[in-house]
Every structure is written in C-alpha cells, then in structure tokens.
Length: 248
Image: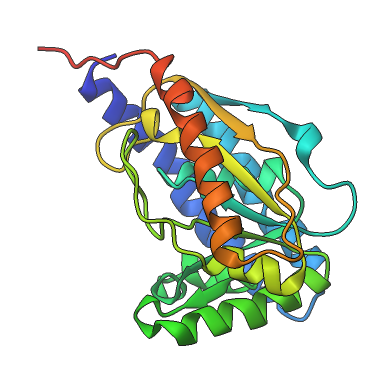
C-alpha cells in the first residue's frame, strides 16, 4: 500500500475519532460524580468504537497471546513496550479496568485531556525525579488496592520498532511496594501505527508474559526480569512482520 493511501486512511479514521473524542469527553465530565467503574465503562466505549473503526478504515486488527498468564484475582502492574498510540487504547479492550502513568501535560489538552482526567490516570512531572516516583507509588498503590490495574511504559516514551530505550524502575518499584505481580507485555504496534506517516494494514500481535512475582525482591531485579522478557520477545514479533513499501 502506498504512503498516500495510508495517509488517506489515517485521515478517514481521524474523521470519526476526533469528533467522538469530544462527545465522550463531555459525557465523561458529566459523570464526574459517578463511581470510577461507571465512568470507565462509559468513556471506554469510545475506545471500542475507535478500534473497530481502525479495522474498518485502515485494516488494522490485533491478536493476543498469553491471556492465561493474567492473574485470576487482584490487580497487577503492567510493564509494556510503548511504540505507538495504539496500545494506549487497545489495552483497555485486552486487560481489566486500568489507569495509566502518563505525563501531566496530556491532561491540559482540550476535551481529550479533560475526559482523560475522569479516568483517574497517574499524571506525573517527568522532570520531578524522585518526587515523581513517590507520587507513582502512592497513587498507584491506592489504585491497586481498589482493584484497578496500573499500566506503566517503563521506557517513558514511544520507541520505534527495533529500538530500545532505558527501562526505568518506577513501575517495578510500585509493584514491589504494593506487593502486586508484574505482567510484562510485548507487541509490534509500531509496525502498523508508526509515530509518523500513515497507518499500515495488518494484524498487531500482543504477547502477555508470565507473571513476575515481586515479594522479597528489589525493584531493579523485577525491572530487569521484565525488560529481559519483553526484549527477548521483540525480535520474533518484528521479524515475521510484512515489509511496508511506498509507491515510487
């Protein structure tokens, strides 16, 4: 598929995604006094719509392996690869109700950020250093105790397929402090929804790894085990993907 066609498909997806973002954001704010589970159920209807429309317009679907590795009871901390905007949406369809660790600037975006605030994310100042970790542990523990999962992208920002960022240990520190298991997740979303350029049709593969126990361990040990599992999984996910070519 040519780059031009890919961009047109992306614009077609956005033509529905953008206005419905405003609608669901306003709906979420109208429910600010409702319990989290109610707000989450309503607002994430947008996610289901967006992922469905992505398949219709751009031909992007997904497949999940390793669901049997998810904890049967209690909440967990997800440490995942971050390659595109796709996983920030699709994880809501794959995993139980969750909050995300994200940069606080996102909450200032009109409509999108306002609706996002209703989902109680852990919004941190990445320049705050140790204070940000303390905030993550405090707020993350509170969410986990309420049965809400916490999603952390340990590399801190989107990393292109085949590249590797530094894995920060804040998410692992939260899991150790809260005595919650870590669930490592690898995927190849960046091949089909890259940071720049159009979207490419295909099936995104998501692989859920075995739970990582945290009791009696240090954050660095837990973080290193999660990193090793994720990065060992990536070559297989990237190697079997089709090559995307652009028209001359």
